[in-house]
Length: 292
Ligand code: R5P
Image (cartoon, rainbow, N blue to C red; front, top):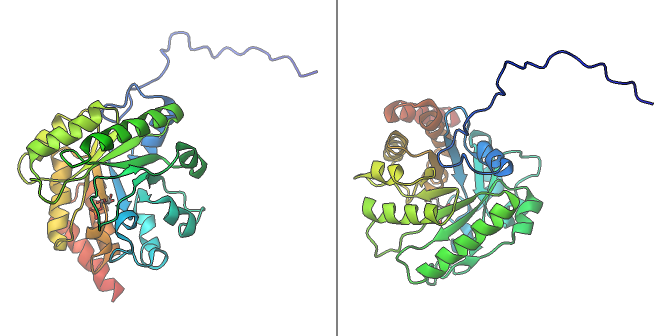
């Protein structure tokens, strides 16, 4: 028979139970599992994240810089907070002893040769759970040919995610002929948040980005977009954080750089260290020189 517990006296009856509001914008009312996953994506110390986006192959095949993820991308992973990839790359290339949180690409369908807004949900929630992912990602084409279907697909993924505590990140895709301005991104990001996603990935704009973040009730992370000169990419990341973004989900401006590791470290210094772009550029340059 187990020994009877001798009641202690540490009841702290005059001490209110400790508890605090969840650190992430718009997430206070979520359930524990979802908050825990979000707290692995966003650092609770500063609310920021550096996501490394390497999912481009899901619609454009072996993208420049991603031809051999095992060779060129794996050395960058320790510098990222999160890896965003497809389940194919996760299962074939990324070793399961990598403990970085994974955000999984859960939409797909058309290739770069076709109408991109024709995407579908391309992954079951069951497989997301099996892989232990921290969030799903789905492209949403506001203003695109298949706008309505992509929005409804997003809500289906949100519903499935809520069932199992897995956050959904909407990615606002912009058609080639559409104007990328704050008005468009206010519309696109706000729609995604209103329809239930836990965070949104969108593009930075030079004019009025702070209005995009201020009226979106969930965190926003920025995509890097097309490759630009390193200092320009660092300035963009700095400005985005300064204007209310909670982080970056960056791909080409890292893995297409002449020093991907240098860019990873420089972006990290900005997002988590508040480093100015010029200082972060020096860091990139130093790493690049050391690699020679
Ligand atoms: C593109 O559709 C993918 O979702 C990428 O993850 C996203 O565009 C971010 O990558 P990049 O910084 O290269 O734009």
